[in-house]
Length: 558
DNA sequence: AAAAAAT
Image: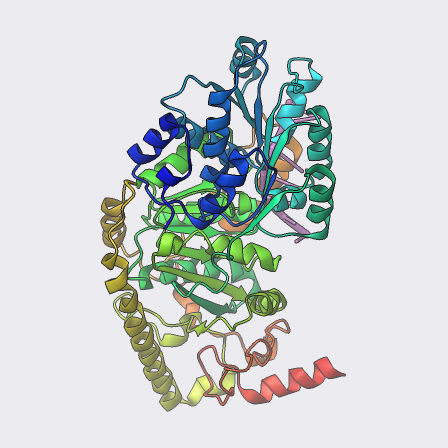
């Protein structure tokens, strides 16, 4: 097998690699580094978690070490879609360039121009940038890119999603025609294909297997969620999230993805109230806080990272045991990216997604993308220890028809039994991850956040029923980024949502009368898919009586 | 429909 020492890298680079504890390149590294060293263009099709970053930083450092700087012009440029990703590339560069005299500047938004300007004036070898800030510098006349010999585009498909392609084309046009281009994308969308045809010349094409899509090391599950009442959707969903967290015995840390920034804030607040160590991260938070939170999560000081899709791709966060999708992502691709944050480097990972009725279409799209059915987990199971004795099992489940409830004691106890047996199922499913999780000692010297894990486990089990008693809406800390109006609006909408959270759901059991059955409570016959069991149903719990399902199906048909 | 990124 190829070793780094076989790749003819500059001894200074090799030394840094070995000091970082690596000997064997990953497939993308073994594939991309040799042609890059020959000066060829490279088209790398790979996801994060495959060692992609080093596959361009290593040859870049090697080649810069050979040549000579001309008149303080940057000789190399790396473009990344998000600030965090750019910062991560910069850190990677520092690691491997530490025995060289090469210098770099990190040009990203959200921080002042002052330091960046100073570095540019002084002259640097490498620019690592997000497109917007780079062009900003250029337009202010501070930057000449005519000395760029190597240009790297990282996560090109994400740049496409974010509308950066025009910027990228413009930047390409500002660099010399003779530059070498290293271009990375997780997928080859037609638009990406077009760009590569235009700006790459006879590239070496290296493709490595998609990471997570079918990853057997990631245990997936989805919980179908239906609020008892529409106005309780938010609070009940957060309560469900907390139960999911409590139910995951092997959880050491987790990223919780929400689709909206506002929900990121509300959910993070809710978890904190429940005594969990959670922090939000999304694009409206100021950069200093984003950095702090991410560092804290990497170092184990933060156990739960509640995130928008800012964290879905690219970020290298080692050792995440769980990814929880609080919302079903509306682009199926994003699901793959999100769950790819766990189960990395061959480790075991677990992912759980909460799916509301309105998300079933998106769920179906995800399942067709990953070409498998995501196992349904029992969402309404109340942990026995936390379920108050007074509270029958259906507290959080879909309301049953009133008639059935009112007089039918036996059915209730049947329901309780049912719940217990589902607990047993989950309980026996969980430990499976244990043995292998420990089996493979981590060679890299990344800090394992295991103290935090213990803290979490012990964290007060938040009385199952208590929805954050007085959750104030979090102020979207969007100040200073010129989005005042948007941020404020978010705050306004956040406020009622959190405040009206029903006080400790004392009367939670009070079921909505059958007559008011929410028309949106769709029958669960869709999305059950092939492996699904027939909804042959007992009245309560999250199963919907089949006659209701039928009538709705008929209605839908007509 | 939303998030990200330049201000």
